[in-house]
Length: 157
Image 1 (cartoon, one colour):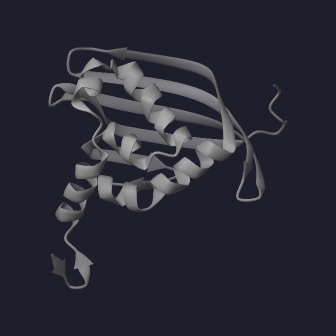
Image 2 (tube, one colour):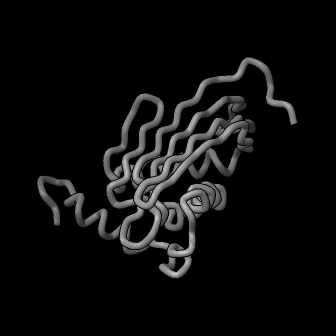
C-alpha cells in the first residue's frame, strides 16, 4: 500500500521478514551466544537476509548517537553499511561477557576494528551490547547498541 507517497511500513517489514528468516531447524538449535556469532558471521559473509533472520521483528539498533527503531529502517539503510564495514575490516574481540536466563540474554563485547573502509583507514575500538529474547521458540536479537572511538595507535597483529 502507498500512503502519501510512502510505502506502508508494516508491509515492507513483512516482505523483509519473508526473505530473511533462517531455517527453523537451524534457528531452534542456536544458543544466544551462537546467534550473536552467527549474526556477525552473516555480516562478514555479506548476507543481509541471513543477518536479518537473527533479529526480532521488534529489534532496535542504536549506533553513534542515532537509532533505527524498526527492522525495516535498519534493513533499508544501515545494514548495508554494516555489511560493507564487516567485509572490509578485521574485528578482534578483546573482551566479552554475557549471561542468559530462560527468556532473556545479554552479551557485551569490546573489539578492535582495523582495515580500510571507503578509502579511509579504520583503527577503532568498538563496544557492543546485544540483548536477545526467546521468542517464537528461538533466540532473537531485540536490541543492539554499538559505539566506537578512534584508537590513537595502530592495532597490533
